[in-house]
Image (cartoon, rainbow, N blue to C red; front, side):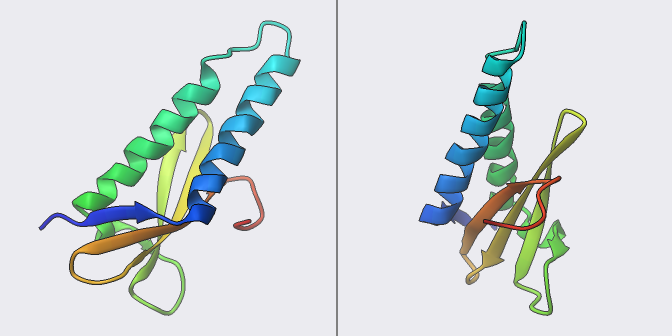
Length: 105
């Protein structure tokens, strides 16, 4: 079974925010890696794509068996995508955060 994966406006805004954060950090560093922001974004999008095949392999994010979190490794840490299995054909990514952030924004 293949799921359709969609992102909410909040999740899309989170991807943009996380991209901007990495880019600004690298611009501020001497010898910063300006490709790192694009690599991070590609890693997040690739991780989210895996939800098409196996959303129920991800950890639960509350009492509901349909609300889950995907861990997306990147570098020494990574990202977390909060998503909900809407029905038998649809997964909705609700938010994305860096693993070191306290909570979703």
